[in-house]
Amino acid sequence: MKAIKIERPNQATVVDLPMPEPGPRDVRIRVMASGICGTDIHILRGEYLGAYPVIPGHEFSGVVEATGADVTRFAVGDRVAVEPNIACDNCVNCLNNRQNFCLNWQAVGVTLPGGMAETVVAPEKAVFSIGDLSFESGAFVEPLSCVIHGVQRAGIRLADRVAILGAGPIGILLLQVIKLQGAVHVSVVEKTPARADFATAQGANRVCYTLDALEKDSFDVVVDATGAPPVMGRTSDFARKGGAILLFGVPPAGAKLSLDAFTIFEKGLTLLSSFTSVRNSYQAIALLQSQSINVANLISHRLPLDAFEHGITLIEKGLEKVKKIIILPQQIT
Ligand SMILES: [Zn+2]
Ligand SMILES: [Zn+2]
Image (cartoon, rainbow, N blue to C red; front, side, top):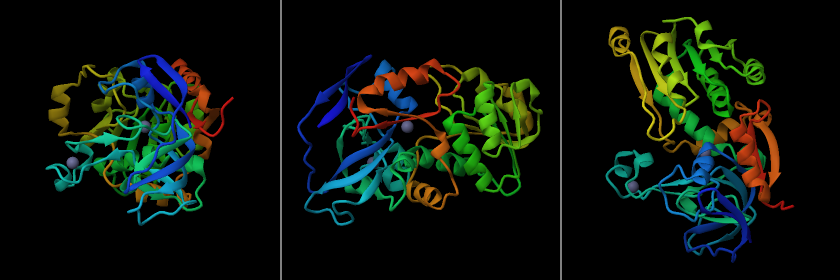
């Protein structure tokens, strides 16, 4: 089978590998759609401390091709998505329902071979049926799970007024989930016009091009979806007294954040972050199947497997028209 192998930072090549055999509790999946995420960029660029080589890809869906002897929930032909974070279910964090902080954490596409390949093997407990959901929508189960976890952490309540800073694909997913959660008003700040227009089309009540255009002291919850420390540092300006801040975007490793300490004290703000997800896959699949959340128009590019590195370059260039890029691993040019 063909796969993208990152041998060392900045070196991604298409390789031919033996077909992986599932263990007794594993499922082998023919990957049909595999989303490129910021984490893949970090892995390719060496901004990640794991071991190389890596087959990247942790946001994917496909069809079950083979099952191990002890697999009970799946049969050949089932359409599935994978929750890439694999917890041991036997450490102090797992046993306290904090599986996202598992002490023996593994992740498909990060520490284990991932979905930028024609086929991938995953443990049955990480595999979820997607029914007749499209494969491309199935590739959003993982990022949507992370967004659901973040929105739950933020405790968005009925009739809340929320500000989201940044309208990339994750900002748009946050917008949709926050509105679904009952917010009556969501302001989005986004400097690139195409993304700002898209946020309006996706239900933002108001879009500002600059942070200075946003009302200070007015939002129940302010969400950063940029991961840019200068933007994150402004979140406390916009939260109301007693409000909350959710730092959702992934900042560069080692970056320092400057927040106004007195403002946080004086406003009594709650400062939250969100790391991956905790058992949110069924929720994500239900939201996608019911079309409560729509992801089809979040996809800007569909590329063959061997265009993985090209896809990453497109995202890095930050071009306005680039939204989510989906790799189709069964296609190779
Ligand atoms: Zn991701
Ligand atoms: Zn654990």
